[in-house]
Length: 256
Figure 1: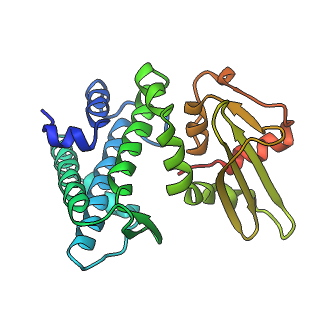
Figure 2: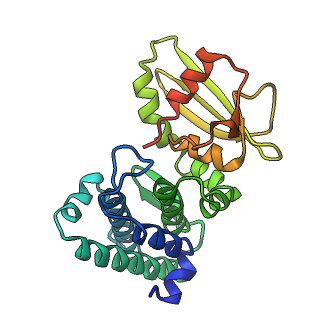
């Protein structure tokens, strides 16, 4: 049973929990390197770290965000203990997020992974993680598509997480001093997502539709592409950019 106060803060928690419970821990997922257990380990570490960083800021003793080796202790515990830790960490994050909402203004800036984010980011980012990694378990079911289609998912992916999302892909492209990649991801009725990368770095922004799109899709597919995922039904995205441009843009969208 998920406490009501936790569901209010993390409404996507229950669908994620049901998806995990419907599978074996060693089942594969759409995140090719991870099993269901690996996804749960990652989410347990996410909830812990988001709560830890925000709690430290509230207490006036800010801490740096730890790397993903924070997940290692969870890989060594039993499945039942992992499950307990995950639910406890989500409850802790909900409590800290509620306290922060009472004590701080929404515009208060907190450092997270080397960049400045605002207080609502912490609960919102966990919500996005629950949606995205539930998709890793279920693929394109109705719940996943509806959640990914929400406009805030695109905004959070671009504004709050965008630049780190491009870094792995940009590095893998080995762009020389004059190499450059630019792509425009379009969803009808919404701003375009414009991604660029060169040897000096990458950028991602929302912009009014202009000129031809590199890839056009529904909003859910666009979020998946930004995170380095691929929808099961490839006919949900379209492109006339040509294979060279398309290959480079999709390589840039490497996600985590």
